[in-house]
Length: 215
Image (cartoon, rainbow, N blue to C red; front, side):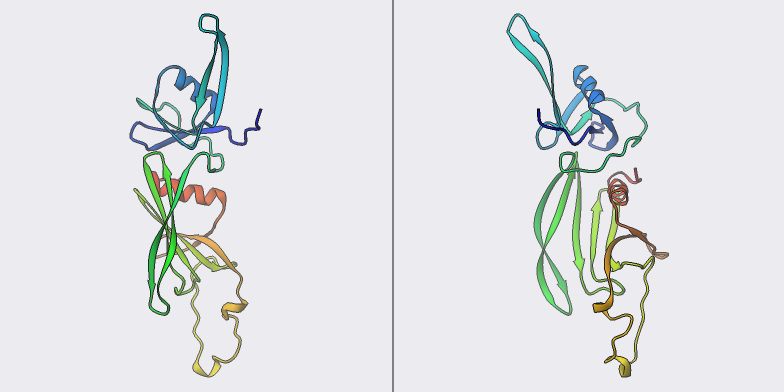
């Protein structure tokens, strides 16, 4: 049997809003009771096999999909289980979009699209010539926008410095070639702070733009 690397199913309500991460066993009980209204995901996350039917000579089989929507209201607390987001739990597709920047003109970039149940989240590159950062990508969902910034690795907030014309020929501390860059999440203005981009912070941002609060 092929090894399973993911052991949780994303439970949605009937409208496609994320409700909770549940176990394979919990998902199976929903299938068994006919509570699953619809399902999503690339292939089954797990296939469960039961006993043999003596009449038709066939073994009972139940495919557990990575995303299921339930009819009725969920009775479990939201996001009590927070496993890592994986390709088997999310659908992702790409498309090209055009970005215009004054210094470089127009160019094509790849927009990432994440489909989470019936919700769509778009990760769109905004530009590379930005004050205090080297790049920005907006994560836009039905409940808001989160910003990912390519900022100096040690920075915890925006910092802008200016040099005089006389010192432009000198290599300064702000020289882009001397800076180590790192992707970070930005809090909303006016009091902007940077948050390190990790699996947990990305998941929190994703859930925030989908349903208005982090997991």
